[in-house]
Length: 207
Ligand code: 3PG
Image 1 (cartoon, protein in one colour):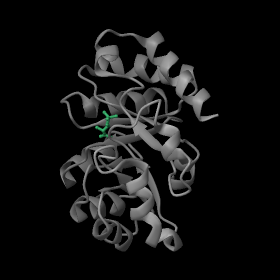
Image 2: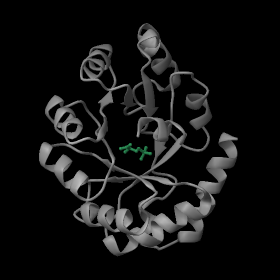
Image 3: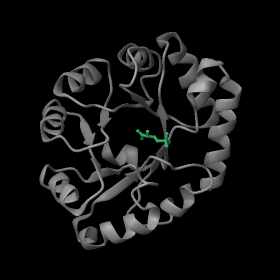
Image 4: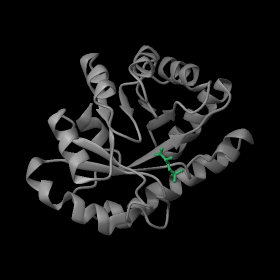
């Protein structure tokens, strides 16, 4: 799972209000060339949206975001998610997710949190909120001492088309995540063509 995820440099972070939009949204991403999706547990529709995507697009890499409790970890895995993320590092959530066979990517923004993540066996960590936490320069300084540990980062929070390559240029950055690829407004408007265009634009910019 980790190897598969490491092949995808850009991860769309999704907030979805209506589970009926899940399939057309996933289709729009796939149409643009993106076969990974993070559905956040920020809405009541998240679990059902995950279930629908897992059923309809079993080859898509499906992640659950904003997983804040072991109970949400269960819901994510039951819905078919194969990886999970959180803004912070809650050892109970990490262990629970891992024990059930999923890959968990906890959020960090300090050296102590990185060490905690490593001690829990997490080789991929979310750097969040990347922009406010100091951006690429901060991540470079923060990650320096841990280069020998093989740890990789997924910065999210304030990452966009214009700054994503500043992060992706860093050797410790495996991928970036962002909500600009499929905004809440675009999903509400069912602007699937606009989402496909965002995805194509981002993937072309990554090169
Ligand atoms: C996340 O959870 O990864 C972020 O909320 C996404 O941040 P963005 O909206 O700034 O892209």
